Image 1 (tube, rainbow, N blue to C red):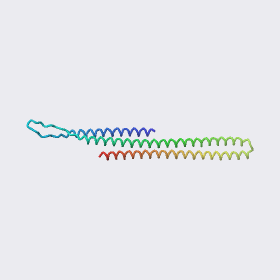
Image 2 (cartoon, rainbow, N blue to C red; image 1 turned 120 degrees about the horizontal axis):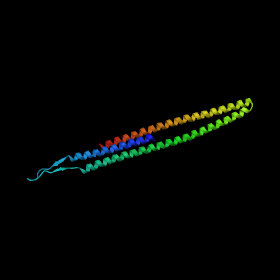
Image 3 (spheres, one colour; image 1 turned 90 degrees about the horizontal axis):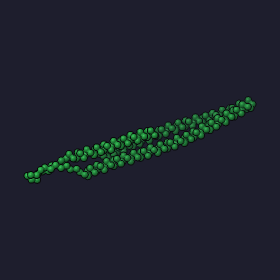
Image 4 (cartoon, rainbow, N blue to C red; image 1 turned 180 degrees about the vertical axis):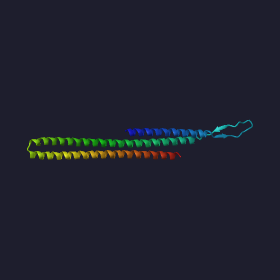
Length: 191
């Protein structure tokens, strides 16, 4: 979750910087168009020269619309990426919960088998030495099976956690790549 918040902060900073740069760009374009002065010739003897600045409103509107399209495209790409990451996190969380439940059941079964083995060992000590030895051997085998099952479950949990981490890293890398592609596409459209 901490990584997700950091990514959201980085993304929001990037979006804010992008908006500021686009506003500055529009400002420079408008200021640049204000510098163009059209001089009119004299119409008569007492006529004065009138300085006029022409601004093409169509060009300004077109640039503004293009900026809006780029911002909307970036917002949509960001929203899709956030949704995808959120879904992947939810899936990973569910898988972890299921694995924890399964491990808990395995641990309870191991404890139950260990208790049963302990009881059988106690009962076997009261019986004849031969019967006691057979019961103890059986209890050791059951405990060994339980420990093997617990070790196997633990190894499976570690494998699942590793796969989940790899899947999350892969999803984040893919989302970052898509954001860069969307940004590059937006910049190409701006040209």
